Length: 80
Image 1 (cartoon, rainbow, N blue to C red):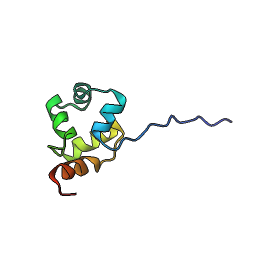
Image 2: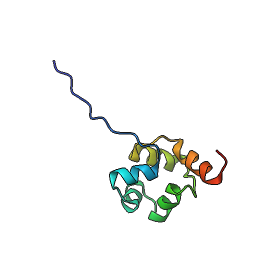
Image 3: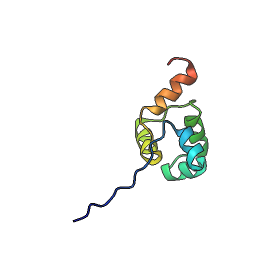
Image 4: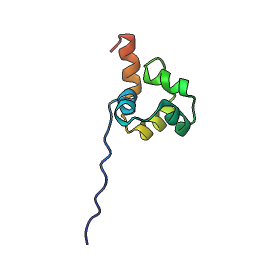
């Protein structure tokens, strides 16, 4: 019996890299997650940390580590 090969999904370090490498748009991500495009923009730019629930949904959607949102936010603040 042959094993099925699983498709490897790349992991991206953060939301900005995901958008840059995949060409996905903030608007499309927002529609899929159920938030505004402005919200996605603020998260991507490290101006806002999403709620734990939204962070989980974004991380799963974009194949990024859950802690990336906090890391980007802290880097923008000069705290990391």
